[in-house]
Image (cartoon, rainbow, N blue to C red; front, top):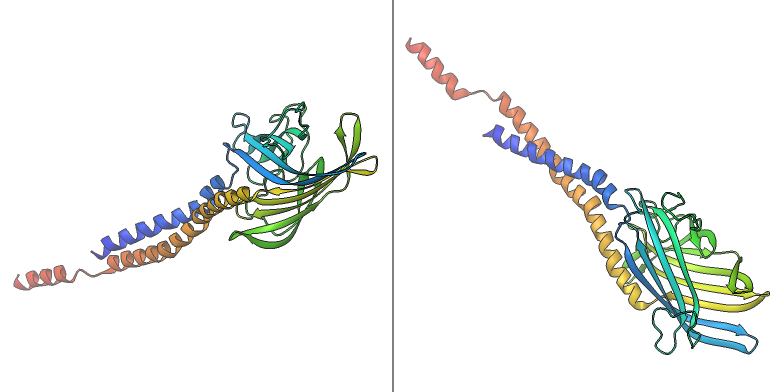
Length: 305
């Protein structure tokens, strides 16, 4: 009986320890990867001021960014994205975007981008096997930070170039813990409109959920100048509804990662190791146990003989 109980305990204990090891190694490696089925829409809103010869014109704005992963071009290590972003004046019940010949002249900018990132680190990958020949070269973090983001500085792709994303503090957004990073670019040359060249400068704060590396909230100030004079200033951030959606979705992803890579292994170790030791001890004791009843019966037979 002791051997049977010992064998069961040892088996269960060993099984739980193996589960813990697999959860921390294989499962973590599988879960800590950007999915290949990303298809998201991010909405931002804010206000802007346009400077013209006629004077200063303030107005409300909104932006819609669509991001889709190309599962056919992606693989186990790299995910390929195609994004589109539209910035419009938020007037007359405007939709997510309008055409360039909109009669109300509400289109401020429309852009498209092809890029690829490492599925674990989130860093840009510029390998031509993943991207079209005319794709813009990217560097650093692009649309997310690495899994298990650290409290340190990162290179971040922003606007027409890169800048340092400087860790500033830890802050909760609707109860979800995030790391806040501050990004500030140097003025860079851009084409503001056909035949009009200027510069672009941006200051952005990012709220990053550290376990997943995903962006929970974003607040940006953008300044465009032409002929060394202000042309357009823009203050824009994720909408309240977008932040709430991000907190719910990203918080769920973070909880799943914690459960699979931390909680499950911890419980498995706490239960499995003692069970394994108890089982081994019972097996050893069972092996050394003296079969007293059989010995006494044998001695009785010898005495009668």
